Amino acid sequence: MKYDIADLSLAPGGKKRILWADNDMPALAAIRKRFAKSKPLKGKNVSACLHITAETANLARTLKAAGANIVLCASNPLSTQDDVSASLVKDFKIPVFAICGENRATYYKHIHAAIDHKPVLTFDDGADLVNELHTSRKKEAHRIIVSMEETTTGVIRLRAMANEGKLKFPVIAVNDAATKHLFDNRYGTGQSTVDGIIRATDFLMAGKKVVAIGYGWCGRGFAMRARGMGAIVIITEVDAVKALEAAMDGFAVMPMAQAAKVGELFVTLTGNKSVIRAEHFRVMKDRATIANSGHFNVEIDIPALKKLSKKVNRNVRNHVDEYILKNNRRIYLLAEGRLINLAAAEGHPASVMDMSFATQALEAEYVMKRQGELAVAVHDVPIEVEQRVSKLKLKSMLIGIDKLTAEQIEYLASSGVGT
Image 1 (cartoon, helix red, strand yellow):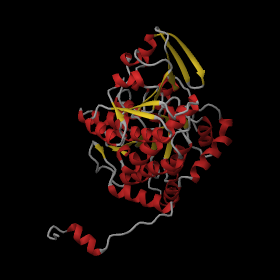
Image 2 (image 1 turned 45 degrees about the vertical axis):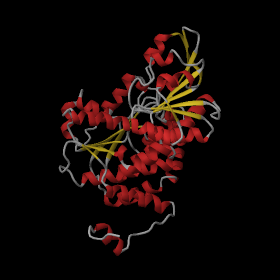
Image 3 (image 1 turned 180 degrees about the vertical axis):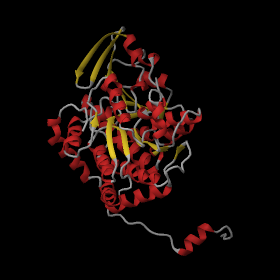
Image 4 (image 1 turned 135 degrees about the vertical axis):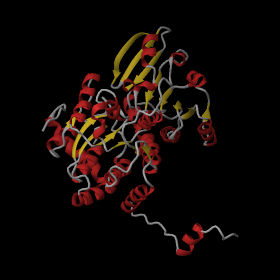
């Protein structure tokens, strides 16, 4: 078995993490148990470009139980948990190509190793694997039956490709599923972003002026958690509806040019690029701190920050780089602008990833039953899959819900019944 990881001897610790996370992923465990019997992916080559964490390991175990020949590579150079990679290889016989802190060349070498696996089904977190299948490895795109994308950033890229007529195979926008963004993005990102920032800085959030850049589901979640810890939260937005919602939710809303002058901690959560730029760095307070919880580090214009600086002190604290501007103000960049919740912490709690990965697993089964039926486009997750995941999760939480009566079903379907 070919693989490329940091250290196989780390496997015992990784196995403990994987099984600990599995305890809090009952919906996925139930799916894995069924898949072990039905084998909906039997003999299918699957490549997954995801964050290599304990939670992802349990998704990989589920896909393998379904009969898939699965290979994993990282979707971010800093998010890999090396002990988890080691355990996947040693204990679960799943090939992994990922090393925490790998350089750009190694990162793409590992993505190409996943493509060399000749997958017919791919899982992506940011669309880097799919992008390679549309650029440097486009001759192999014909093999792909369908791809699954689980991030806002990735879905944005893929919808743009579809609109430009460049998309070569069907894609499922798993990120847009309610069982993903309503929970993973809001509660998972909200908690894990705060966790990563505090681990990296040891900041007291109470009383700190925190600027959340973007009020999508991730921004909502982070703003909610930061306010809950006593922070004074400011929202910046480009979308009028989201800005209005933030204001109605009780947050201060202002343009980034204004927020840059008053903020102490800035967190990007947009899926776009250069949302913090040179004009913002120039007016920030001394010791302003910047973190990213969108997918890519391009949300922060790091080259502009470096150009404005006379000196850069690396790792003044673990995951903290100090940029000293020419006016002697200091700006602290966390985790090199990479995903703070994965680079400096452990990513989302397993309980919330249970829903996201259960959706991934059931959707994989769904699309394999419909090979050749899906148009080349970006598709939403069907409501029937969403309902199955939600019911599994509720059952694991020992929560029951009501059912419509026959009279209620008839009433909802009728147009002739008035007051």
